[in-house]
Length: 286
Image (tube, rainbow, N blue to C red; front, top):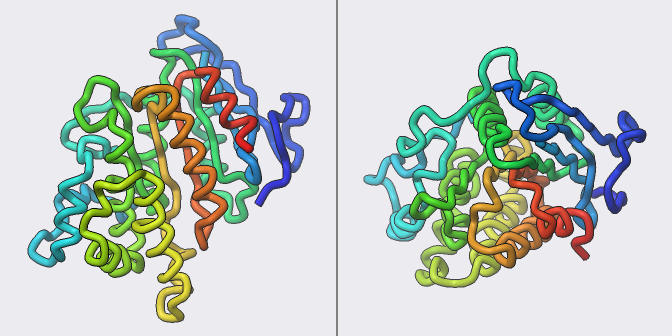
């Protein structure tokens, strides 16, 4: 857990709470806005911020339905399958071309691969068209191939389901049940105990389908040791395309709390436009 609060100035780069600040041109060489990485925090955890001016994850929706419990079938009915990084709906998604965005991708992957991370959040932000989604798609593919991707959600304001905050938890949990199989049986128990959990609030879903299952798996001597070897990176692209600003702030607040509460550390790579309400939430979340 980090003690740092607020943004770190670029002059402090390479300190313990490192801030990256790259100013790069978009791939087209038309200046849309700078790209960089700064450091910021939620309360309790430092957050690198990118500023723009797993091997085990497959399409969870295509999991073997013949072995699914009734609860898991209901879970999969509540996911947004088009939000996965490798979804059929997102066939041929934007990604970085060879020799572009190399410094940014290198810095992100360095953070992803750190064994002892000091930051649980990284924020990629910039104006429309600056290449945020291409960067996160490239990172998702690299992490998927390396077995480092826990789950992903690529928001889209114009795609049904991919702009709905109510589908976020089921979509992430359905993927985590594959990348972290030790939690699957506990998720099934939660779904059986409360068949209506998927109609409850995002907070209630996080508690029942994420916190509870992971805590029980962490307390089980048969699975405790395996959890830390599993991929725990969650990628969220286009946060500003999910509902209204109030919803976006609420999701960030919930993720901040989740990062503190989960029995094993998870790491969040988030991209959005540099909206002030999102920046303020990263910096000053109480």
